[in-house]
Length: 132
Image (tube, rainbow, N blue to C red):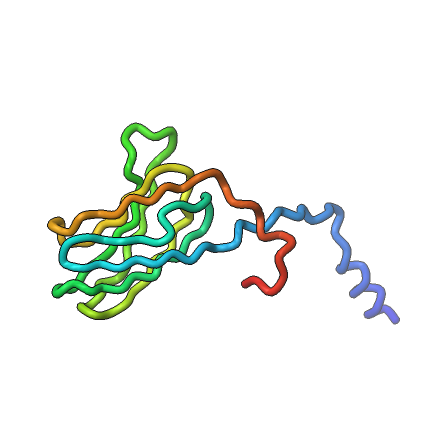
């Protein structure tokens, strides 16, 4: 009986738990790199978590960087890079993108970068079921 009272006394807390909304549902973007250019699809989306899956169709290994492409922005830039991707291989990177313009670049500076526009914040995934 005494043990039950001690257990019940330790269960409550004086302050209610704050229920913060979940982040937006992650967006999956794809990219391909060849010996001339980086291509990304879709080229626009809303701010929030992004996973970029990249296929390297160039003849050399590449590291892909997804970074802000604006000068003098209101807040600091964002940058994420993939691991080294072998020719004919695939890789991925994730970034929590804010509103702005981004460049998706290959490590070979001769390859033209892609431009991606990130719009306003996407809605919360709070009421979406079966999400990670």
